[in-house]
Image 1 (spheres, one colour):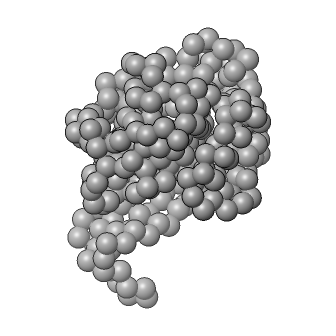
Image 2 (cartoon, rainbow, N blue to C red; image 1 turned 60 degrees about the vertical axis):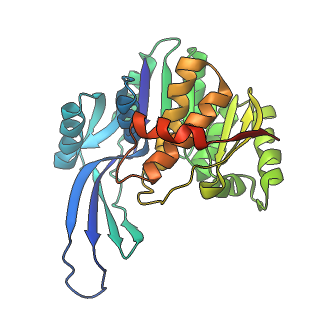
Amino acid sequence: MIYTVTLNPAIDYVVSLEAFYTGKVNRSQSDYKEAGGKGINVSRVLDRFGIPSTALGFVGGFTGKFIKDYLTEMEIEHDFVSLKQDTRINVKLKAEAEESEVNGVSPTIEEEEYQAFLSKLEQLKQGDIVILAGSLPSSLSTNVYQEMVAMLKQKGIIAILDTSGAPLAEAIKASPTFIKPNHHELAELFETEVKDDQDVVRLAKQLHQEQQIDHVLVSMAKAGAIYVGAGGVLKLSAPKGTAVHSVGAGDSAVAGFIYSWQTSKNAEEAAKYAVAAGSATAFSKTLCTKEEVEALLPQVNVTDI
């Protein structure tokens, strides 16, 4: 079974305007609300690929109810811990071909709520796959992903990680199976500059060899991606298209890798599918579909480095 973990979910309130003027009343051309958060996005994309998953994490208040109702309507299983405080709302403004975001304040996770969540992880079984994705609420320690990865691996559970900053730096010490930093996050992780592909390969090899991470996929936007891991060292080109929706592209790449790996057990094919999935979401107004991904697959060229 596949589980996604979103410790800091949100309602994404997406607003489109002709132009945005500070200090004035702005009227939207259109708007919509959806359940947001990296792990939730992975569950949504897997669902579009025909793969069931269960969404785990924390939700609270009327905003948390919206997220649960949203996933229920989509027939995506969920088993969240209920919080005393409301889940946050993130506002995403799209105006004049630019995107701006105002992210809400995270709710406080009480100790008993956190322990209730850990008890859910402890019930998972050997062979399960858990995707730990997204930022952490400020009330949680930066090493919680590390603790979770270590616990999951001890139980024979595959731990997939997609986060950044201090939580990523801590979590790689526990050797998750797969990580997907972008090149900026990779540079931040090693406190250095990433100037070219060779820098990416060198740092990704350190993660693969020294931290014993089986699969490292470094996304580089229009420049494609570099994969380092059990499948070798590969450069993957990005499909051509116009980016219209950046939200969820990285989450789609994670879902694409997992989906393809589950069916092919081939790292090169999984990395190709990940790049195509991330691009398909970037080129769409919402998260990608399986048909959109497979239409882009022929454009993803792979070369050995």
